[in-house]
Length: 323
Length: 294
Image 1 (cartoon, rainbow over the protein chains, first blue to last red):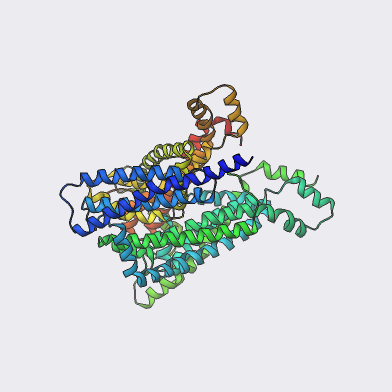
Image 2: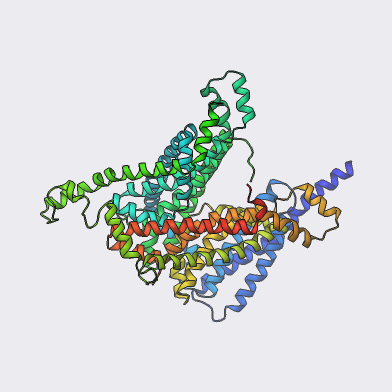
């Protein structure tokens, strides 16, 4: 057993050491190429050697990532994705510079970072406007109304047959067709976008919450019946715990839809605030570095929102879910 | 036992609740429409507009750009935008164009998604390197990229039908890839062991076990993807120099503030969305008949 343990420890250490060298060579090599091209200032005459260099370094990186992905440790799970992202960004930077792609078409990652910093005040204001006033409020309103409707649907069978089919149908309505109607009806300020988001979130919440509330097993309900439990007790102890995983699934879908709906709704009219407005107007100006910066910011906010709901899900609905 | 006859009676007419809800919705719509339009109508009257009606209530159903259109106005709007259905300016024609772009995008996304899903399943290092980014991408508002992609493709000479389909494919690609990778992984250990006892090659395990087992997951993913792809197509039409499609109609009538036309186009967009999902469902029944009973 002692020799086995030693072998195991040796095997655990070797991938780390083995992966480090090719990864370091790949990363620093790409960084060196990027710095060299930045010094050149203009696009070199012949991009092919740079392309071949990038490909060679990427192959080295792939080898390192394969080695890093071995084993079951936490590093083996986290490192490959992080390194893939880093190497991809570096490779994109080098190739865009080598081929002299105009910034008006595809800005380099470094230029996007610079734009993010330079326009941080305006972009943060836009993010507050779009995410907090439109997406978050709309998400809250849509969720509350959706849950109330779900309770009504489960309580009254007539509503289940009458309302639920419409909710399922409306889940397929493209938000981009709904947005101009609502914006024209309610004005250019943020309330109209909030309504669009609320409507978008409402339908998945209703459908999933009803499915969850009805997922309570007859065996459990009968058991509570033999205990002479009141309907409120049965509801609280059986139906609600059973429904929570479904509800959180809907909330995760809704959190993604909320931000997308807010941004798309802004394409149809706003008073000069918001990420969607910023994206649209800067695309028209070919100021794509700011556009990408806005998208990066929206992605980070969207990820944080989704992550928050996932944390709440693990806290309140720890039942493992099937696919 | 008292519940049984009641259930039987309701089961006897399954459409009755839907019809009742529909009638109630229509009845609620009329006062809501009057309430929404009376404000603009009274403002128009106060400004001296000659609407040909004496009071704000009477004018509420005759505004040129109502907040909520009256049923008669809606019917007229449908007629003017739907006849003849094959005209390039009619909503049915443009809906078919948008639907075509979306379906082409979906086909491209399915092909690429399947390849990526296979790679995710067959190579663990590839999975660890890329799956987190795929999952992350689903929280990214990718539809916001549509205007930029449209401009980019236009600069490189890709115009017409294809850029919208490519944007739809880009948006639909991720749910398909993630859904398919989950599906390809769905066979349980018992089934895999059975294949092993048959000395099946990895190729046969993939094509005869994993691929059929993943088809239900594929169609579930496609139903999610088709709605997202439709949004992408319409946003792409709005962002590019488009000559057809619902997005072009939305952009034009939005600028003209023609609210009746917007309502009609919204209805066509809704019907297109429902129709596309139904089409995927129909294809699912054909391709996976063993799941029809579920």
